[in-house]
Image 1 (cartoon, helix red, strand yellow):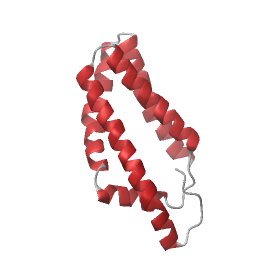
Image 2 (spheres, helix red, strand yellow; image 1 turned 60 degrees about the vertical axis):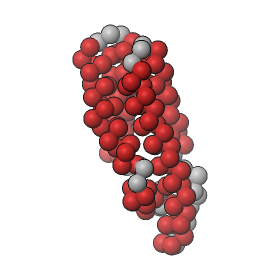
Image 3 (cartoon, rainbow, N blue to C red; image 1 turned 90 degrees about the vertical axis):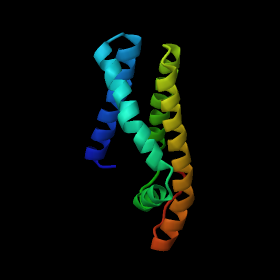
Image 4 (spheres, one colour; image 1 turned 45 degrees about the horizontal axis):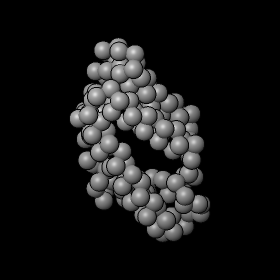
Length: 132
């Protein structure tokens, strides 16, 4: 992963985690609005697109030569499950349901990409592990 990709991953995920924490736990209303906007205006539409075979195929082609990043995947899951827990704990059930849908869509997409990734790597002659 290049430094630029790592930086943007950190900014987006750290910003989301921070807005969930400060918005719902600390009661900062602007951060709460930002987190809800992220879930409803960005994550839900992206979640709908992740179900498509076209998206899974494109991701498989993009990731065929990259090595898996288990630490990043672990951190992503901690942030996702933590946000879901905070949303439920503080009574934002509809938004929590939308976030759970996004998490399910990401899981289904990961499984589809995992299936297609080996096929893409074997067609292009790329070597590497397929554990991501």
